[in-house]
Amino acid sequence: MERQDLHLRVLRTDVAGMPLEWIDYQDAVRLYHAGQVAYACGSLLYRIRGGINARTGRRSVIEVNSIVATHGVRPPVHEDYTPPLNNLALFRRDAFLCLYCGERFPASSLSRDHVTPVSRGGSDTWTNVVTACKRCNHHKGGRTPEEAGMTLLAIPFTPSHAEYVYLQGHRVLADQMQFLLAHFPRSSPLHRRLRRDL
Image (cartoon, rainbow, N blue to C red):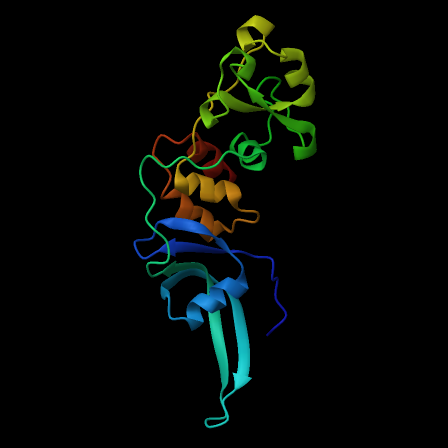
């Protein structure tokens, strides 16, 4: 194998082009070898060289693109799908901003705040949680933003499956981002922010 940046992830989709997940280059090679890749698009990420065929003298090569569409490996995602809630995806949804003071922080300085506190009947769901710096979260305590005299800077939302795939990505390449944006709902708050960053 040629020396390459092996940390880049491949975006796997179904045959219809619905984003499914991020995979590493080894998983992508397995899919190619098993004949499960229907087509590939995006930029060439890896050129994996294998052994030499004793009969032909040729060396095997598998080229892995940034986006691969695969045959029926996973059931389709339904419209009522709700992705699992985790802090890193939440912080990425909110662009690592405290949605009370508006400052950007590293993940280690952020926390999950329940807009309506759990102690007051609030749920631990995407539409009731926001990213908050630890200082603001402590100041708010078990109160609602109104009771604490704090302004919520954005309305929390549940990401679609394609948005959640984006939120799970680490180094999303430009062609992968364009592909994912095409699958975001038109009303997605992420559209404006991500198009500005491209």
